[in-house]
Structure formats: structure tokens, C-alpha cells
Image (cartoon, rainbow, N blue to C red; front, side, top):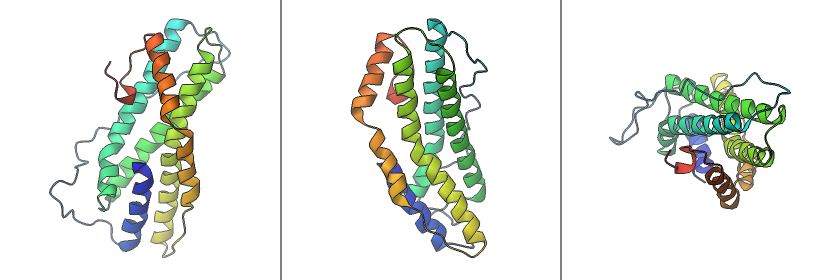
Length: 201
């Protein structure tokens, strides 16, 4: 999994330049983060202990998945820079952290929404499958982001800490093609159009 490999580059890059803020890119094809727009819309809902009708749950699933996809694409250029062995600037690190926080908030908001409300028949199990799948696929990023922030703090203080890569890598076992296929079949069955999973709306 690409994101697993990325973590090793993060540690390498940060350790190699412990007190330096940036390293100039040596590759002309290094992705630019200057044009990255951080999505301003994520899934939110104030509803609690209410019945959600079918039209609303369809829109909610679409919003959640579309937001997840937009955030994933926004994080892409930052991950590519790390993958290429280059260091993110302080500004880029802040933006990358902001994207990861939005991903986490998006997942938590949707999970709370489907667990604290009553969904139409045939939607509860599949909505939970979607939530668990997306959260599990993002869990690696959450933990990597936390580990990165702790490492940056330690480096600024002249200390070096170890990151438990096994706990990060283990999260990838939850996500598999079989579960994604079930989700996509459900989306097709309910005619829910989303750009998630590389699908066209």
C-alpha cells in the first residue's frame, strides 16, 4: 500500500534534516502544492434520535463519500512529495495536517449520524459498512499524522522518538476489495451517484 511506504520516507526526510525547515526540490517533476485547494465542505449533521428518510440518507452518503474523495485528492500532492523523498515546507505540513483533520472530522461526523439516528430499512448495515471501510482506510493517515506531529515536536527539542510502524500497517488489513465491491454494488442498487472509488457521477 502506497501510504505505508510513504511513512518510511517521512521519517527518513525529517531525520535527515532535523533542524532545517526545507530542502529545495531537485526534480523538475516534483508535484506543486501551491495550487492545492483544501476542500471547504465535509459531511455535517446536527440530527440526533430522528428518523432519516431515504432521500436524505442517499444525499448524506453521497456527501460523505464525495467529501472523502475530494480530501483524498487534496492530500495527493503532499504525499507524492514525501514519496519522492523531498521534505514538505512548514506551510505544506500545516496544510497536510489540516486536510487530515478534515478527513477525521468527516469520518466521525458520518459515523455519529448513522449510529445516532434511525435509517430506512436496508440502509443501516450498508451505511455502517461504508463508514467502517472509509474510516479504516483513513486510520493509517490519522495515526501517521499524529506520529509525524510528535516526531516534529521531538526533533525541534533535539530528541528522536520511534514510531510503531506495525500498528500503522495493521490498519490496512481491514480494507479489501471484497468490501469495496459490496459497497459499490449497494451504491448501484440504490442509485447513489458519487465520485468515490474512481467512479464518475
